[in-house]
Image 1 (cartoon, helix red, strand yellow):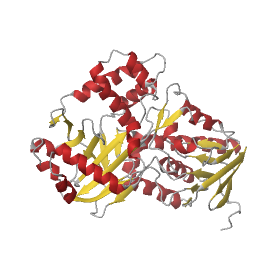
Image 2 (cartoon, one colour; image 1 turned 60 degrees about the horizontal axis):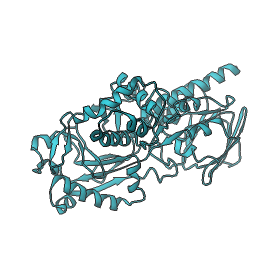
Image 3 (cartoon, one colour; image 1 turned 90 degrees about the horizontal axis):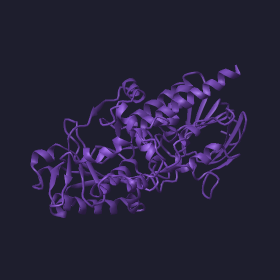
Image 4 (cartoon, rainbow, N blue to C red; image 1 turned 135 degrees about the horizontal axis):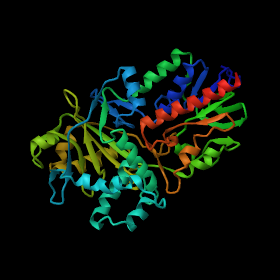
Length: 444
């Protein structure tokens, strides 16, 4: 391929994550000539399933299906991927050093968030709202930890109105339920990619975007693999990457579209996770809690430790002997820059303390450790987005096309209250595809 030869396509799509692939599939199946430019050497973006040496599938990015959302469940049914609803009990490390079944403490912790669903006051940060609220002092640390951990957010920045909107959205989609994808989330990615290529759509990997120059009806994208041109371009780059546009180390985009200014009214959240694959489910035989509870454990909330949340595989005939540690929000940044071996060593130390066993036992059971630093990853620059105080209109503003030439999609452009989820990315891709098809039909 001549690096400077114009490519005969109708639409360039930047990013082969869930939003880009969803849009590409919809457009290709409607007859448009599609070319996806992906900076990584793989498809999927922040969906990344990895096979451990033991054969177990480990998720380095998105893992859970949150709630029953039609767009995602339709894709699951169509692709033939199998899922199982997660069950199990939630355990909590207590102040006396033991582990006990959660005694409705989590439900009580959610109460302030439930009350935000109809919040109509000034849009404050969660921290400012909490300081002025009647939430008991002894419960504020726990609810703050939840907001930061679940949303990968900074409590001093996240919008209180967005939390209320999100809570209502989750109630409408049974967000309290979650599912696990057997064989890895990446199967959905691969299915979408196969649908794109079946319609002669193309995916160019290892294609790092350096600059975008555009005017109405014409886009030129310069990459590490040459220059590509098309009358339209769909940008599905993560929020953290958009926030670096026209800054040092970022992509040049001229003229700068309005969406870039809107991107700075949102925040990219940060999270750290490490999955440990063991020889056996050794923790189920410890004496820190009744064996029946440990065998039914789905999640474990720690006390004053990092990672602050742990979960284990369930819903399989032979559950994988894995434990995943998670920390979200500002506290997760302490893990940024650490090697996998360093994180694994710290995790073994922490687990030995939690389950009150010799650390040598935990280390002897360890087969492999898996992690990815999404914050340090220049192609994501964070885990997933959230809305900053005062920015509730920013996601919608980012959905508006520029002169029917530049379009934007990605979980950060969701307008249904599901930011940071795979189904938000899918919805945004479908919405962008309809916008593009609408402009096509107007020209015919």
